[in-house]
Length: 336
Image (cartoon, rainbow, N blue to C red):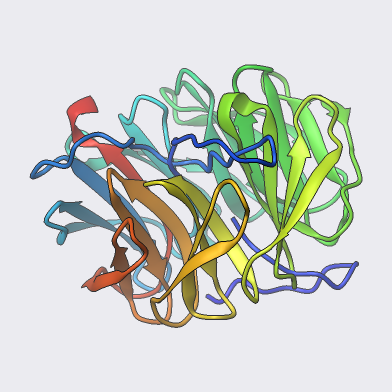
């Protein structure tokens, strides 16, 4: 699915999964959600999980060298993927099926499936991996799921259709974008209680954190820009122009990596200047990005594959994954 929708402000954009940090002259660098870090690459060191929207499955890739190892059946229309901090679990949302799947990465196998009504779209784990927040987009609600019990513990109402979210474990905050709104919601990561509703301008889409969770980054619908926000003051620090329509982003392997959905590109962005240093043509409709050591993995919806890009920003090859890749997360296999 090409992730495009109109927003009240007329902007558009996108977001990702891996925990890596780098410094920038803007006073903030991106930590987009995903698992893995810049350790030395060794055979069988990483496992990546790719949501295949049209196949109702999750592809399991192993590498380097990267290859398709297996597929796991999941409910219809798997969309977004998030990894727990310890790398032992990934969560996969299936909006059309009203379900979220928890996968044990150490097998890998499906651990449990949780019913979340209202088109569950995005997911993120608590710091200890025991809880999972889910955006129920068509119900205008957030759901809190017990991972061990496989059930919804509570739901809370939101000001509009919740789209993407990310949890800041240090401050105990949850940041969330709202469809069609220039405002975002900042909530308690423990209870879901609304704390702040800063208006950022543009139309925020995806969300990720900078190092130490001091900054929050957003892509914007119908826009070529990323927005950088101070996590403490909730004020906009900068807007950075990158590509035609950036959807998702991750930091690591020496750069910020942005999927330009409108341009069919993966952009290598300098973390100090915010300038695009390299463009890799990866195929139509690239979505989420994950980083595993020095390898950059991009789920490319239009090619049914995962593009493998070097840390220099060059396309190496495309790994066949299955029908309709969208979300992707990678975990370091030593944590398994």
